[in-house]
Length: 417
Ligand code: UD1
Image (cartoon, protein in one colour):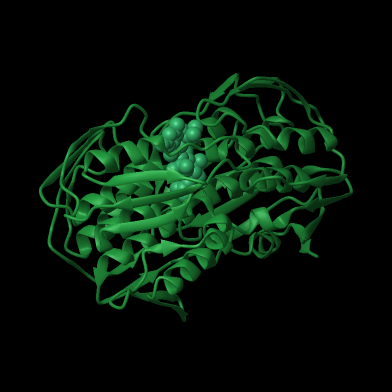
């Protein structure tokens, strides 16, 4: 168990480079299973979830290594189509290997990912789509067994909700399927576009990513590719929240403005100022922030659920009341307990949280229980008087590449124990 010790009250200033996107890196690593030849992934963040993906790839018989700035994967000798439970348990996102393995080998056997710290996380949409593409699927004793002895075939798939994971699994399965697959109501997240860009660089024929309808013409085989992973919009939002709560002034390098189009206006409504020049974003915050009355999480391009906890930490010290409506996950307010221990005034009723801004937060010992919740507690701790100890940093390390170093370089007093 590791923890962060934060001595709050330091105003952030300086420049930081945004890491590669976790939610792009994971499906792209799974996609390398479909390819023959060498894949070179640049800007791949060093995260425990990335390590878990590399361990899965090696277990399957692929060569996967970190070399300098890049991660290199070669899947020519892939020899297995089963992922053991111990590896599946390390990371919920490993479900994205299902579509890739099925497409490459005609078989996949892995354990059911089950619930997680955000509440139940069903995969019914993934399985329904793969069945429509010709897979025979059995679910017994927590194990999912998929077979497509005659290969997968293209299909028209109408998603009842634009699930990110289901869209990715269908794209991976369809890339090598026979015929054309059409996904209606597909997820439009930038990380979906990044996955499709990687696959197209490998020889896939995918059209319309980033729009509600994605069309995939299956091809016979895919080759390796070199690919730059996009910047992580949620890490950018984390650093913006850290600067906002400390009345800071920072520059973030390597930000894609469009990916932050639902986040920037909220910070601006709070009184922050942003400017863009050659892929750098300048961000400055006033001494006293104004509350945004309502923040609702939505599928992209709406405000992302992954940034909800971060904005809540900032809302805790805004002048006025902010109402958060969490529309994506059932149980995503677990950071509230920790924020309240630091002095925040928050009331939760089901999927709604009402945050009444306070003038000050105070250091305390708090427990992180999920990835973005951990980041939210750290953001709040940057503002809190005296010392805060944030435990459960292993959650944070699933998605942030040395956050304590980045924050320290911006002037925060943060150290990892
Ligand atoms: C991905 C992201 C996660 C982000 C989420 C929503 C990765 C590795 N993770 O998670 O960081 O918070 O998108 O933007 O990219 N659902 C079903 N049935 C299904 C699939 C999903 O009911 O078959 C529900 C889920 O329970 C959840 C909602 O749909 O309530 C959103 O899930 P989904 O978009 O699939 O998120 P993930 O891919 O799990």
